Image (cartoon, rainbow, N blue to C red; front, side, top):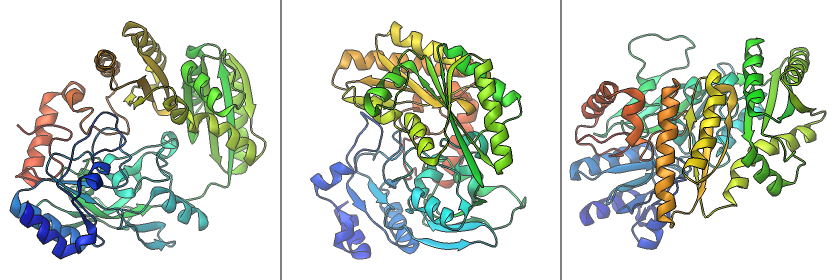
Length: 459
């Protein structure tokens, strides 16, 4: 390892290779509580060629590599393995091209998601994926985890906006998959194998993104419900009415109380659920859809519906949803933001089950999330130093994931598998599917040096 580090310093310069323990500690975590490990070194390439050289040297020495962006992941996907090289791509942050004729943007893996969105907006365009961490998350991390966001119901997730990627494989080979063509069905869709692969198949260094015209108008509504089932039925009724809002979000009573104590925005503390709804598009269509959604919410039993009349009012309503995690995180030393997805028709049973599990195991859980696409975030408020409580938390999580799968759902809608969800993957997909994934991993990374131990164990 000493020789390898010396070689890496020759390639990058000493200032871009961290080896001191106090520096390494910072990169031993991502956004996932409890999980941490110490790397042998952290390196900061600035070009694809430097990434290739790092990977080749690591492959020769059989030293594992864990690629990383800003470390906002919530499943332990970028937590180091002991003695590895952490390859941090945040200095590869250039926007290389904005092509308005083809509505594409070429960016390096370390480009921050919000910067991409802002550059697109300045040209009257839209990059739709908006993960909660978009202010600091990098596009390479978004691709690796196939990140979602609040606009996922209407616009989809990161995968829907990746037209091409540049990837360095485990042997140092460089490949480009994809192009600017709207249609291309020549051969296997290779780029899609890397989206959501969490850095286990290759290291993404550049991404070609698809952009959309920016919607001309938007309308924001907030509906409150005394019964959680009524909120879930409202979601189903909106979709049944052939309305696809750009945002259809949910907060349960625990989260409502925490948000109100945190932000003081006038949320009713007697409500069991809140729906945050947004529609965008042509101004006439937006007005029509907003009016219909308001009426549907009232018909389903909403105790109140607030319709924003200005951008400032819309931002105030949006605060109720966007501050959910921050509000919950104030209550306990450890906040575990989980991620389970079910068909929309099963949302009410899923939320009720989460509430019953909190009582069964005597743990505190606030639930919020993307009700429009069935993606819920049961959030555990706990203390990782309270070992008996953490054991109950783990049992509660296992039951929640099992129930989601039983309802026809899955163990993760946008956070990825990483380390945190690895024990549950076989239950969700079946052992035969996991075996196929392992075979693919062995074919492209036979020595298992790329992010080993994430998603599944090869042994």
